[in-house]
Length: 350
Image (cartoon, rainbow, N blue to C red; front, side, top):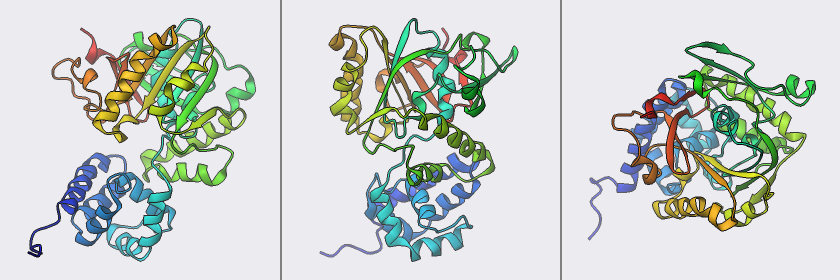
């Protein structure tokens, strides 16, 4: 029996719900993306086309960036819709060729409070590293504020005046002066793993990272930070292993110096894995110390609901909306702003 055309396709309904949920999330910092998302959610033709892309390729961040990359502009939804439909074949092709990837170096400001308290030399391994920009927390400048006031220079100076003049300044608001980083970590080794590594020496690849940053005045500073960070990393590009983090984590971790404390970290990566893959990654990360026979610290910055182990330990009533739950070795320790602008430890204190 033929399907009844009066009933919407469940895949289309899922796309509509996904974009409708994205709209209020983007509203405060990118009203245009919010308008696009709401428009897509109520547009049968677009939801049908996006549904055919599949879940990974059809996510709002990727579709919107692909449309911009295809030259569809930054117009209000009615105009943008026509541009997207005209260029749909190219937009769909871009979603197959490219991925949403970590492009926010500001997250280093929320990693530093933990990294600054690691004794001795540190080896950094980031899973889902993209261009490796967050592997250089020791090379950037920081300006923290807290209820006690401003803390523009809480750390030792960079290695040279050249580093200071070229490095981005990462601003972060702390809810307690106790979270203020004590010093820059002594990073002696750094590496990353990514399905599609980005070479910071490739201007086209870097341009894609810029395209992934949402339009809107609230995000303009992020573009400047990205460009400054790329300038720093280009002088000493890290080793990035291409492949699945589940396949390569143990082997790459084993390459790190034995006399350094290995810190494995990630931000907004596990959300792209299914539940079974998240469990496998969690088991791998938690078991690295025993596997390597030395100290390993696992720092996770993920949204609530991604790691059940962490969720079960969250104090009742804590609202993490719009922030990562930062955990160390599976224990929640802070709420970290998704772009690094805030770091809160008080909600998770006993």
